[in-house]
Image (cartoon, rainbow, N blue to C red; front, side, top):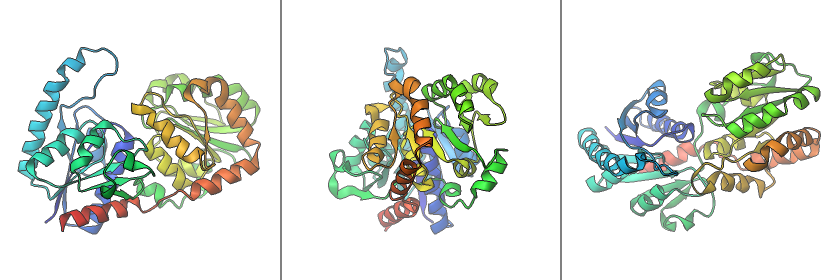
Amino acid sequence: MKKFIISGGGTGGHIFPAVAIANALKKNIPDCEILFVGAEGRMEMQKVPEAGYAIKGLPIAGLQRSLDLKNLLLPIKVLKSVMMAMKIISDFKPDVAIGVGGYASAPLLFAAKLKGIPYVIQEQNSYAGITNKILGKWAQKICVAYDGMQNFFPKEKIVFTGNPVRANISESKVTKQEALQFFDLTENKKTVLVIGGSLGARTINQSIDAGIEKINVENIQLVWQTGKGYFETAKQKANNSIKVFDFIKQMDIAYAAADIIISRAGALSVSELCIVGKPCVLVPSPNVAEDHQTKNAKALVNKNAAVLVKDLEAKEKLISTLLELIKDETKQNQLLQNIKQLAIADADERIFEEIRKTTT
């Protein structure tokens, strides 16, 4: 019986691809055993069991970018996490480890190296993080979603697979009419989906909030995912045309309802948007390592597949950019056609194939 450990997490951008990889493993090797390793207190500790998989937590944490006493504890947490990861590997005896990024990925993959367990890295972003860059030297394969990744990894180890997305999105059959009915919206208005990632996006939320009167005047309807932190503020603006949610579980339905999508530019979001194939306005988060969301966004913008609004300029420009795009059907069609060409719907199967080769 084949056994696999999948490590990583922290945000939906790491967790959803990890679950998609696990599902592909189960689909192709039904009797395999899968164990997840995550970071204690992070989103994966809830989301992975909800997806039907076992998970163990490590006390690992990220480096705080500002001066913070928590950074003094980091070496202790790293050492403890590596020791715990080594015990997990000794007990579970995996054939292959798979790292998807996030705090827990580093100690688990380092422990796998020390234990002689082969591992595969799935790098979602166009700019690799420092952990993956270091651990990529010893990986069997590195599955990537963007061109130019030889700047970070040994060229011979790179395989272009794309990012795996949730099956309910890649295989969605929801019609626009069904989606509008689900959200109790009408068919005679343009519908804009606003999403800031699984944790929300303050700048996007504030920009939408500030422009809510213009949105109402222009006869636009919104499906607005705010994240928990902004939900109480935003729900005061809800009406028949503005539907406000802290989190949307039925993202396949939300995507189907949309004519235009406003989103952050996390790797998973970008991959999903390519498959969904709708005109997008991307507002990259500046609060990420090496500004990788801007690089993700520019990979689309350079191919005329999305519109970019900088986070710093969003409060001034987001609403005007949206209204301009809504009135420009030609531009919408160009973006729609170009973004569809970048879609990779079978990334999970491509990654499975690389994992399978590692076990033979």
